[in-house]
Image (cartoon, rainbow, N blue to C red; front, side, top):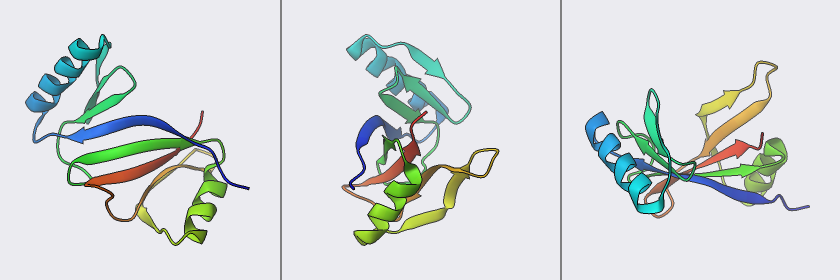
Length: 116
C-alpha cells in the first residue's frame, strides 16, 4: 500500500538571522501570513520556514508529512532512496518523528515528518 504525503512547508536557507527575518517579513506580507520567530528559524504562516543559518540542501528543504512515517521510510527505501540517519529525531517513547532523505533534489533536501 502506498503512503500519502502532504506538503508541510518549504524551508529557505539564509546566511544569517537578519536575512531570515527580512525574508519572513516579506513572505508574510506577500501572502497575508502571520510571522513567528523561533530559535533556529522563523516561519511565515505554516508554509515557509526561513532558516537563520544555512542547513541541509543548497537552497533549503521541503518538508512533507505522512500518517505512518515508519511505513513511508520502508516504502521509500524499497524505491531505492536512503536516509541521513544523523538527522533522525524520535519521540520520548522512541518512535521516529522526522528524518531527512540523503542528498538533494533540485537544490533542496527532503524532510519527512510524522503527522500529528
